Length: 339
Image (cartoon, rainbow, N blue to C red; front, side, top):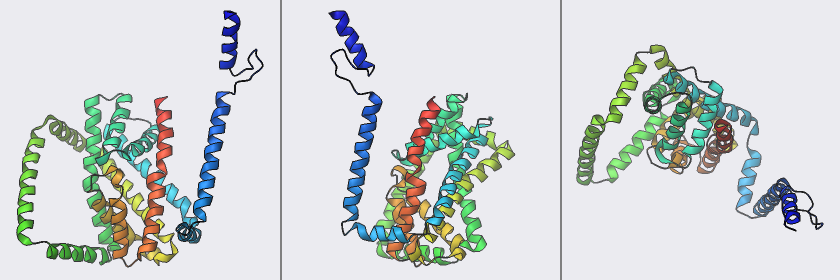
């Protein structure tokens, strides 16, 4: 009897009919049923939302968008991660595969959605370089060097865009007006006291950081990279290209919304607006700059004369394609890299 029971259990676990005549469904069939049920629930929820009044303006705006820009947005998003992989590969000093390094950037982006300050991306890239044969200390230095090199690269890119006529005076004028408004609304004495306290704290923290072993390793990594001029140029160019591709994607997102009244002649102006707004949004230590980046981008478009509704639609389209869409790809890439 025990042998018969064991055989029945094994038959059920294998997904075959048991001796008693009842059949156990296959695990794959169970997963298929769950996926189908989830798809039906999503479809029902979408149909319910489509019939409500708040969703009708959003659906109407989505129907009016120029969806011909979508393939270009997806291509720029992929190029963004490819340029990031080129910069990391050049800084490592090793011929690591570009394809797998690009997959690692998708995974790093997915990790960055739940960690502030780019810590998730730094951890993923460090782990990837360790798996490619670099020592842990050197891998961490390479990732830190790439992040540090992104600051002067973005500044040079901003100067190049503004110098080539992309600023058009409107972004700088808007920044000046906002700075004057903020300075005029804050009492001078509390502002001076707060500035003094923050400056003193920054000096103390800077001294401690400069004396730490991590700062020494980072300086050594930067020195080593400066001894390789070709690799340094590739890192700077790759870092600038990652930001520039996102700026172009933002400009195309604005052009895709009819109500923005923007044309191809405003391309560099929109790129300059993205560079300034992205820098302002990244100052808030939120995971991936969620919330602050969207607000800064909408404010930049409003400063350029775009009304609030189309500006919000353009920003949501841009963030959906370049920020949220890579997350499932990053999870799939993570499984591939683990294998």
